[in-house]
Length: 357
Ligand SMILES: *Cc1c(COP(=O)(O)O)cnc(C)c1O
Image (cartoon, helix red, strand yellow):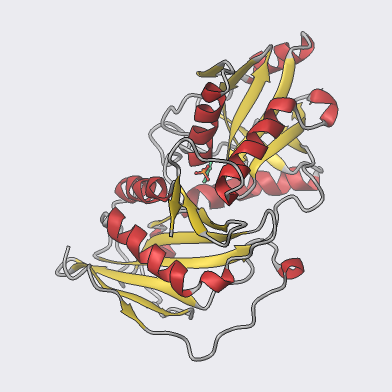
């Protein structure tokens, strides 16, 4: 990789007005600056720069528009009550970016350099990090093919960009468990496909089922495996956990499930609290049976955006399963409080997960 060690910086001369806490929402506002870098076969990743947030120009034949060669990440920066800026396991996100890059034939980025670039971008835009409880700065690194060419092959040129968006408290009115539809027609991913990569096509592929479910009053889809339509994989774009008869179970990573960093953190937290936890295959029939036996105690999704989303109700064919009377469960609440506490600096991090700016 050539000339990756200097980052040219051009500051904006027209800073934007920052949104108020009430205006925040999710992914609607963007900070004053962005990080950008280019790839060519001859130069590798080069021309690292921090520039004012702005539109980018691409040739209409740029391969991203035609064959979807793109990858993204999602992570957050938090401002602690003491005013420090911190990241949560950021090296994991850049590592996963490269795992996804590899699956999509996009050249690897230098993970340490990307983290250093993010830290520089954060220090320039640190006033954009909201400090009210539950708020954070969402960070979106992404790579995509830019070569102007209509041929199906890995592109010869790419961009790597990082943009940042101040986001509000995900649960402004307390955590409300959601209604989930177990999908029986559409599938999200299959083993051997791209389910393990954070690539745009997976999400475009899920929109149809999501739209149908929304119309029927469900907030998310529970995805079953793409082959036998029995094994539970994910919920929406989150990993999923069940508590059955005192034991916490999450589907084992099988090649079609995205390896969530929140999922991994939950597994560590559960073990540290001496709660029994299993990573294994679990069928929808097993969950229905647990419900009928009265031992389906809790269910929740995990991901960076919401951290935890409790499941209040599951619909599978003609059966409606209500979990914990539609209330958030004890373990779900404990995990939420502990993880968000570590992330925002109010609970001590005994795992070494926090990276200070
Ligand atoms: C991003 C994502 C997750 C959650 O990953 P985190 O690292 O916890 O944010 C889970 N499933 C899918 C499909 C995802 O895209």
